[in-house]
Image 1 (cartoon, rainbow, N blue to C red):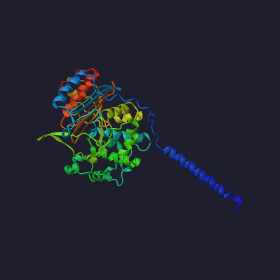
Image 2: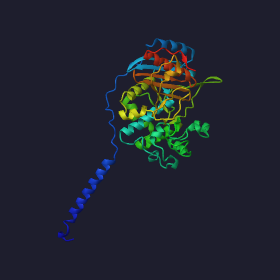
Image 3: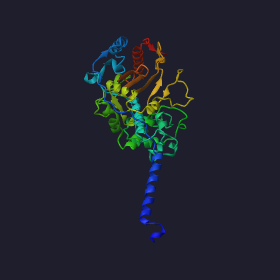
Image 4: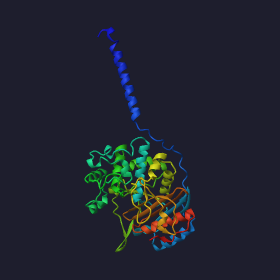
Length: 405
């Protein structure tokens, strides 16, 4: 090519290459979602001493009656801010061994685990890895056509329409058969949706298993490893993790026809994203303080976690105002369900699986946390009443005497 016909060809090509790179960079800059400002890590506050504390006299008296009679077995912790107001355990960790519960006994959390999965999704959103508005099919491949309208938001808020594990044929066999996350996803993909995503709310363990699968795809780590690295190690939660036969979880029990019966077959593999964690009273207090204290998520992500995502036409529940459906958490005036009642808003979740019944609740205005963990599946009403007695006394409300019927 003659020199006078347009300049040196190498120079022209270099200029064009530079312009292409600059344009590509501008397009990428414009399309990347800016990540919210995540909390700046701070030194962990010192843990309170692991000793019995009984500074709530009415709760103490109630638990001495119920603990002595076996009406409640498990552990209770109540705190205002970082100050522990009550910490005590009652009953056996393993009746066959004559082993009593200890203040640091490990309990199966069941669905209390969902808030950890939800927080992991929101942490990844804060880090710019994903968004709750992502289509599920971005992370699941192959993805059935029926799932095209599902967003991660729908899975988090129980509004996806994916049939839950317990609503499917063959639940009895699945309950006792171990499964991998991939197998659980493949099984869920075999079913059509029960309703259009976002139009109804229906409690859903399968949705949280799918979220666990998404976390693994997005991070390249097994869900237990990601939760350990992102939350448990930084918070010093050494007694929290995914249950296996080596995790030293106390024995769970059930009140069956033959009497108090051990429940050793946990098979939490089938609820790996929905209910597979174990923890202790004090580890859960650390978690609650970090979560509700702004140490884990950006303000935007935390606000989304505790917001109500149920459709506007969602009906009341059993004649009482319905709960708010957050991400891995609920919110409601739980004190309406006891007598005398009280109306303070609580952020909470329950859990029940294979010999365990739990309730963890937080009252944000007074910064009161109540943790009730029972290793008896059939102590639902006792766990609930104790949680509300503890909350009421810590808030200075009238002490409830009974459940409202």
